Length: 179
Image 1 (cartoon, one colour):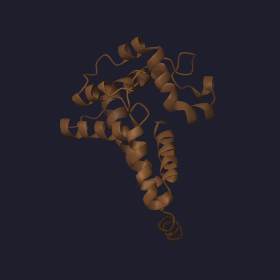
Image 2 (cartoon, rainbow, N blue to C red):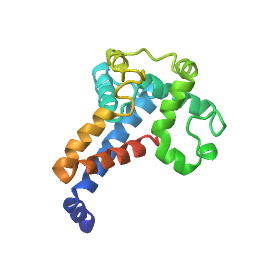
Image 3 (tube, rainbow, N blue to C red):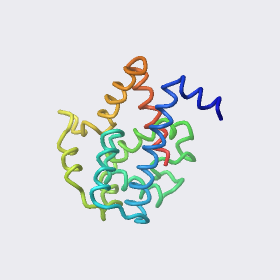
Image 4 (tube, rainbow, N blue to C red):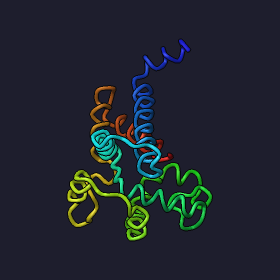
């Protein structure tokens, strides 16, 4: 155990990655999966909004789209209609491409996604993020977690180089989308 903690102390990138993944996965698991999708946990409104803002800024999570895609995934698991089935798309494609698959599904099957998340009541943060779009494309600016990527780049500058932060964000984003 001492060798592991020494290794982490000497490698800020690994420590930052492990910490980021643990925090983000727990917030996503408790808020999105357990709280919003299955109603197994009820968070106070202020804490729920904090979780939503945190995930929205770091990973670009749109709660309504996430709930819709996750609902489709549960309803159509391991079929051609599944949002991110390793059986259909291949394990490595899903591992690396889940962020992009969700965006494609929302763009191509928007009505189905909205229907799967019909019970979700959008918040002010949702409306704010929807209004901030890339001109000409109509895609929300933070759809892919661009704000999080910029923040991680700044962390990367502190550790070594900006691109280590982008790599860290990509690793965190891919890992956290495999819930």
